[in-house]
Length: 121
Image (tube, rainbow, N blue to C red; front, side, top):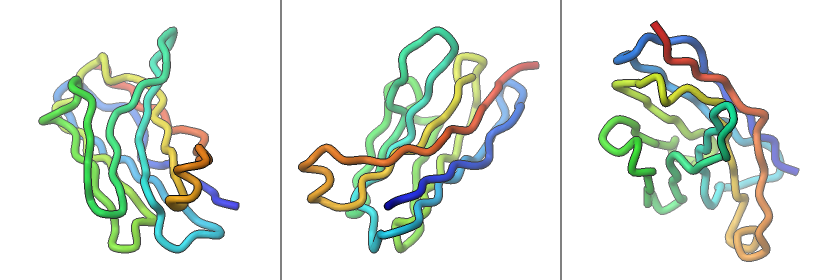
């Protein structure tokens, strides 16, 4: 079993910064991939940024140049540095972890419960 826990959300003014953390634990060695998603009120969940164990990253167009995803060497903790935040970034941010390549092929993944980010003056 894999547990995923997000932290770091909160209230920030437009133009401000926030760093989210996502920690994976349990029956893992090196996580295959971790992805940040977000869901704003009344909207569908959308991909924000992802990173693989090889270091390959991917970003939504709406956050490119403002958000940076990074990981620790063991790939068990992933960070999302969010700069130049806008009100439209307000959402619950969820972390998703894929344990290994086998789980990736099988479509098995693990979700955290989310952390709320509110961008408002």
